[in-house]
Image (cartoon, rainbow, N blue to C red; front, side):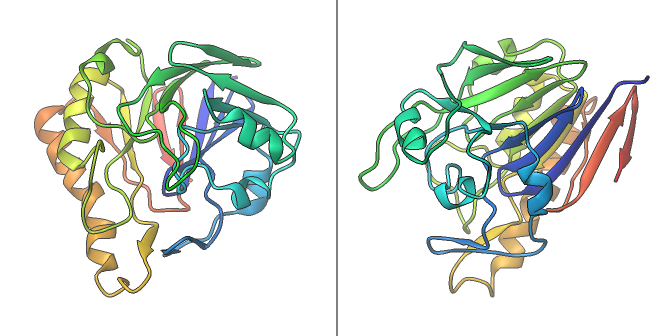
Length: 259
């Protein structure tokens, strides 16, 4: 049977990835609102997200580690989390929580998941704990990099030498970015280090602050288009596929189909 990779961009940093029969869900944000943020566009397919075999949490910011969203999942779901987050999640009743530091590897048979450094703040504001910030390289018959939230850092060149897909944040949830993030240009520049076959922009097009819906469409939809333009200039060998929240993509052998 020809191997395949199926991924759905659920929205924000939430992606459902299926490789070798294993379903992984990243940074689940499954509600229509979180704090002052409101969802725009397609709602998550909750049943599909709840079918995940394991959940990857990149860091403890509210829009990446959302406790009400996690409580929608079965408490026996395996959680793979950054060092410093385990106590909070065990208090929520999750029984299988694996704490990771950059360089650590977890096995979700038959996949190997390696935690990678991410250049980002790990504090859970305003008074929450501080944990590591991570990305993840997932290795099965396909190799996928989920960056979480990060700025550009030179060690990206050493994360993997055979990536099939890179899931890269290209924005956030407001009209401007602060701190260590990838904007469209820096995300495109990261392709020269990561060298994936395919890049899919994430962390855009999903949430906007309450009261800013009137300018939401501009800063929600511009970043992935700008990323694609920059990528065509700085990394023309890398294919870019923009998926709207709710859309899916399948890789099968060397072919690529939208679903």
